[in-house]
Length: 81
Image: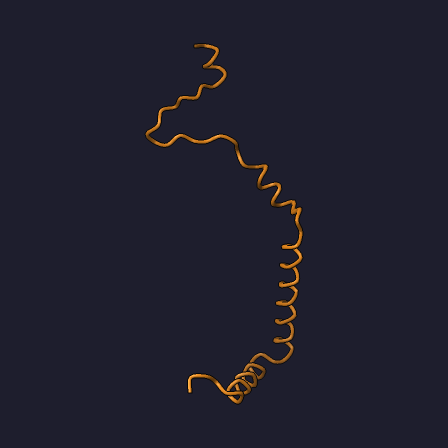
């Protein structure tokens, strides 16, 4: 009683085809398949240029918290001391 029978699914399919037409459903499924193929292709690529750029753009070092004293000296202040 909790599951749909084959007749329920056929009626739903018929309503969808009547509302959207077979051309739109076909185009939608084709675009969906292209998206999946593109996703699989990009997942298979080991050397992705966008990932390499993102890792090289990260700055080195760390930031001190709001209560921490600044202990690192810049080259100019190190020469003065």
